[in-house]
Image (cartoon, rainbow, N blue to C red; front, side, top):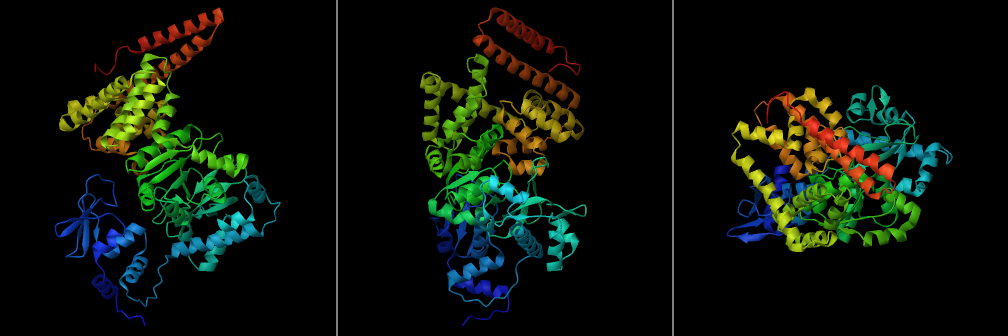
Length: 582
């Protein structure tokens, strides 16, 4: 018979009496004896040197890197993403303590979401198969069984009202949870896709337009205390078991991509809510596997998302492969070529370092010496990452592929990458050594295109509209390109810090701390001039490429004339700076 307890304190004391914290934690993470205590790599933040300590004497743990702290129940709660009560139940089970708990733990907001899902799901199932929403689903290869499995719904405009009637909650809660906006149902006339947290709680929704002229195509619940896009992976609640069983996760970009993959037997698939995989997503995946195949869309946005995901996953020591295929996205690939071809695509996935080399090559005219130099600078960023994380085997394969691709001596390529990498390192050292010097900080901000742009955007909001007009997403400089891409997605500063790569996050934080006020007009002038020069150079390289392939004498003369005119434009653009000399 279960023992009765008067409060949680009595329960936790009894559990801790019966459990050894080092034994429980060692079933989750690798621990090593260190005198009377134990150490491990912290499971709550990325690190190379153990700063996570387990203290058997006090039955607690503490991380000196991220300040995570608690007892065995706290650990289970945080590691498994459980509520306190569910963590308590699990710990009690491990301790052999029988509980008699009758505690209602589901928040009212989640009850409202559940009611809304039930009503919209039933609404979809009640509609005739000729209805426009069913015609939309049929085009995507989605049948009634799939609708039931993934609990898809449809909003005809009165489902929120019915949910409020059923739950007796106030309209205010529906507004807070993003179900209503300006007195109307937010997801009206849209296919409803429920979004669940790792525990399976319905924390939000996505609404897909079924009429092609309706914009935007997708809308999501607004973020609240339950729903954070940067922390949730779509279908992770269903796939986590299969990810663990297969010791591998497949990451896609869209809801229908993930659904199509599940229907094709790849139930270890998740999707990001937006284009960027974040550090929080990586930590969630780390609990189940350290192997990932990215399968983002095959467009320029998908390329950027893939490179960003590689950056995030690599820093957390994942083994990464990149799927390459001939279709717009995985959903289209499956509908056009079937499951058999999908298996072949996954089997032939790129090694991630080869993907970095090949995808970057497309953005440079490598017959041009200047462009080649810029390309190798970009490759040096990755070389530096491999070196920093001591991934020497990958570093060697990376150098070998570049040398083979360009028919250059391997030692020469390594020397060039090492030199560029050293300059990147040295520039960081200089910044740290001269933290208190306004002249040196100004020099960094004025002469580094990325830092100039980020500084002006952060410190002078009145210039934001103007600098976004000249912003160029095709910049070869990865941090700036990433920053501009996040801005164009409509992200605000906290969201940028959540979604950005480690490198960009560090740069933004560094510039945010700068207290000195520099002349914004001078920085704006330099930015405009530099962006114009880069765009003109890109145009020149394109014309040169056309010239190389052109046989007609008249057309060759015209192309040459345009190239000379553009070179003249670059020269004249370097006129007097009205805001003073550099």
